[in-house]
Structures are given as C-alpha cells and as structure tokens.
Image (cartoon, rainbow, N blue to C red; front, side, top):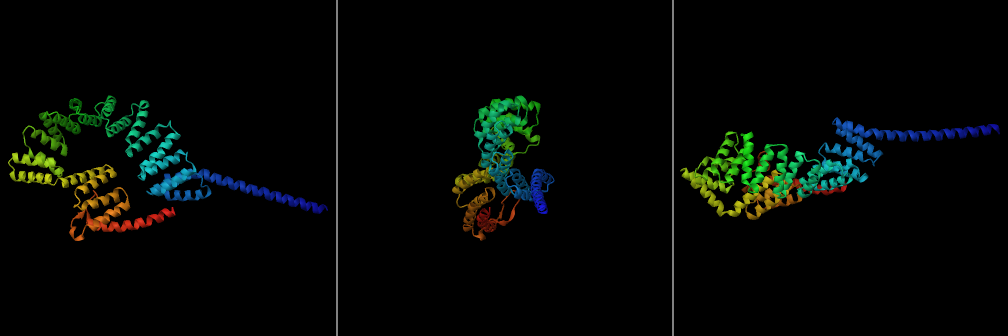
Length: 456
C-alpha cells in the first residue's frame, strides 16, 4: 500500500507542477503582450519620425490584431496613411478609432485634421465643436474651431468665438486681424474700423493694417480720414507703393485730381506697374482734361474685357489725334453695348475664374450658370461647367452630364482651338478631345465607386 500511496502523491505533485507551469506560461504571455502593446506606440512613432511610414503601418496592423480596441493605434495608422496622401483611407481608420473612444482628444483632433484635408470642412467643424465641449477651457481648441468656421464661410460663429477670446488675449495681433476680416465679410465695417485702430495703437504704421483701414474708409465714404491716415504714413515711409495708391485713390474720390496724379506718378516711379495705377492716373488726368492715352492703353491691355477702359482709351486716342485707334476702340465699345447679354456673360466668366482662384468653387459654379443663361450659343461655357464640377468640385456625376452635353453640341470638326484647362499652360488637345477622354475616365470611375463602397 505504501508504494501505491507514494505513486499517488507523486502524481498529484506532477499535476500541481503542470498547473503551476501552465499559469506561469499564461502570466508570462499576458505580460509579454502587455509589454509589447505598451512599447509599440512608441516604436511606431519612432518609425514615423524616421519617415518609415510603410513599416509603421504594418506594425499598426499587427498590433490591431492583438488589440482592436486601442484608439491610439488607429490614429497612428491613419497618420501613416495620410503621409502618402491617402486621406480617404486615413479618415476611415480615424473614424474607427473614434468609435472605440469618442472622448479621446487625440482621436478627435486627428479626425478634424483629416476631414479638413479631405475638403470636408463643415464636418470638421462638427468634431471641433465636440472637442471644445470636452475641453472648454482650452483656448487653442476654440481658436481652431474659429479658423474652421471661417474656412466654411461661417463668419458669424467664428467671429463670436474670437470675440469671446479677445478680452483675455487683447494684444494678439493675428486674432485682431481675423476679427477685422470677419467683420468685413459680415458687412460690419464700422466695427472693422474700430479693431483696425486698436491694432495700430499696438503696432503704429503697420503697412498692411494701414492699407486695410484706408480701404475701409473708402467703403464708408470717410475720404478725409483716409487721406489723413495715409498721408501720416507716407511721412514715415514715402515709397510704399500700396499706401501711395490708396492715398492717390482717396484724393481722386475727393476730386482733388492734381494730388491724385502726384501720388500715382510717385507709385510708378517706385516700381508699381499695376493696372489700378495706370487706370486712375489716366482718369485723374482725364478729369483735368489732360488726355494721356498710354495710361489707358496699359490699363486696357491688362484687362481687355473692361468696357470702361475701352471707352476712355478710345476718347483719349481721339483727343490725341490717333483717329484710327479712336474709331476702332469706340466702335468696339459700341458693339459691346449692343451685345449686352453676351458682354454680361463674359463678365460672369471672369468673375468665376476669380472666385476659383480664391477657392470659392461653389460661387464660381453659380457664376458659370449665369454666364450660360446669358449666352447659350457659347458652347465653351458648357465645357467650363463640366470642368468646374470635375476638377474644382469633384462632383463627377454632374461633370459627366455636362461633358456629354458639351460633346453633343460640339462637332469635332468645328473645334480648332486648344484647350486651356489650367493656369500652368496650354494643353495641346482640343476641348472636344479633352471631353471625350474625360467622359471615358469618369464612366469607369463612377462604375467602380459603388464596388469600393461595398468593400469598405
């Protein structure tokens, strides 16, 4: 019996050792995983600091298999994707992190950043408001929300946020300049004047603020104040061409034409060659019955769509006995006035280009539509609308519609000119050829889009 009991005891002892060994393995494995997870974010960050984004992304994927609830891993992966301009993918990953922890400020901040980079500024504002709600004492978060509101053209909300901050940061020049711009956008010019004067008390004779205040005085017809402001500046800096032009224009509006001529001539001598200076130097002389046609010629050739300069160029040429030139440009003015709808269409097209240059693509689209309403025989406007939807708005469905409409009204044989589709230079294909190529590309893109959505 004793040997048997000894064997039983030995078996129990071995089982106990096995159980202890098992628990030890589990503990060590758990500790290893935890240690790996604790170190990994730092390792990933080190890889990203060394611009090794692909390796960082791969490590994120491996660790997410071990712990899919860690929001920091999603943000690191999103940043690795964003490094390759994969903003849509980065945004999708960041949203997964947000679902894991909707109060994580790093996650929310990353979402705001990626949404803004993807052009979804209004959605970025939504998350920026959530971030402010989570940390209302954080002034940086509020300033970021204000900036996003301005980008989304929500000037009223952005302004109110900055006005709330201003009492505790009343020497912040950048903040005050943004307040001025917001007041101007909202048409509250008197308030903008007040803040410009506040800035000038801190940094007297700042050329940017002085010129902005001068322009505000022009808008509110306070010409005398504008002249006093700019004249005082010119006593300090007599060669600043921006202030010389503003001072000259204020004198012109005040009907002090000799002073206006002096200022504009000084601007020219100091290197200014803007259309504005040539135009109003010509006009200030014209008002004194001095007809210097080269000024009008220079202003006209800088923008041949302006009817007013076309007219004054013709009149000044006539007074200078340049009869052929006078007849040509006066007839040109007359023909434009007869075809007022077409001329209006050209004005809208030019305005559309201007708004595109200022990243206001939606406004540019409205202007293109108005241009087409006034001149439906100009098929090129259809192309411009297609291009607007395609390149500026990335609305490929509407772009495809207008490209097709353009093609249906455009026999290829009639299109001989080259397509200038961006400001970098001419493309050596016709508008028609460009439209044909783009229709094929968009058809493929729109067919593949639903498949990608299903996969996601």
